[in-house]
Amino acid sequence: MKHKKIIKILVILCILTVLYFYNLNINLSIILNISTKQFELKTDSEVTYPVTLSGEFVLNNLTICPRDRYVTALVLVHTAAQHFERRRNIRSTYGSKKLFLPTEVRVVFLVGIVQNLKIQEKIQEEHTQYGDIIQGQFIDTYHNLTNKGIMGFRWILNYCNNVDYVIKVDDDVIFDMWRFLDNLEAFNSTRSMFCTPIYDGQIFRDGKWTVPESQFVGVTNWPWTYCQGFVVIMTGEVIRELFHAAHVTPFLWIDDVYLFGYLPFQTGNITIRPMPKMLQLEPNPEGGLCLSVAGSECPMVAVGVEEKMFKFHWKMILLRNNKTFS
Image (cartoon, rainbow, N blue to C red):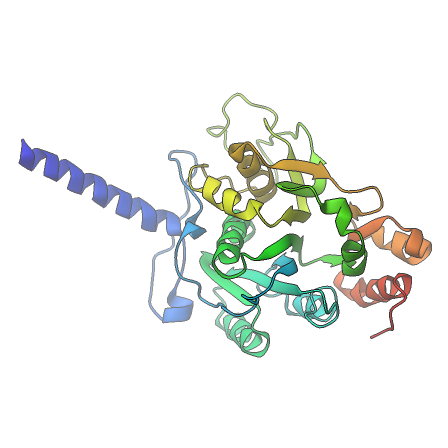
């Protein structure tokens, strides 16, 4: 009987090991020059969890956040690996370490592994120069944005857990850090996410945001409120609970719904709040018209922006905050 139990345990361990590497879905040949077989992640026949809950970082910097004082705002950028110019724009503007002193502001850019060796080499050079790239062991694709977000939460817990606010942005966003810092009292609610909430959002079974029929069977709308994810401002203390919740929350590839809806729902004590009245969010580039026309009266704190228009809109932000052009 003891032998049979031991055999059963070994079989279970073997199955779990195979499933782990099956779901990892990475290609380390780019970094380690070894060949690996690509697998297609199956989410319709088994329960999976984010692959970035553990594992080594490919690129990292342990000293971005000071350990002897709090960081007021950490800008957490979900960026595509090849978007070098967008990252340069953010570094020199609202992600600048020096521009908002004595307030401590930091920025990190989250990327996955790319299969183009030249792009990977450029990313490594970029990290050597700026030291702000966090690269994880997953393929950098649209369907891996949830894995990217969980990696960001884990990085914060390990290397920047003394932060007041985490400002998650996509790399096509321009953010008025001065207006945010001047209105911190509007964000003094603890255990909160501030964003554009989506109530009773539809579950799509086809198209860009397809959810397999085997997930949320018979449900047509998400059973929780979630944040439109292009900008989400989180109070620092929620990061630990979101990350811990991911260990028991089955993977969902739609990052807005999972990271900023499913996880806070699972915790049971994180509140999703709409943005304050004079600190609104507009994901479309048309929001930039408000900055250029209304100036200081424009209620936008963040807008979506085309790369070619980034510098123009930044000048509008400088102007309305009475700052010198740079």
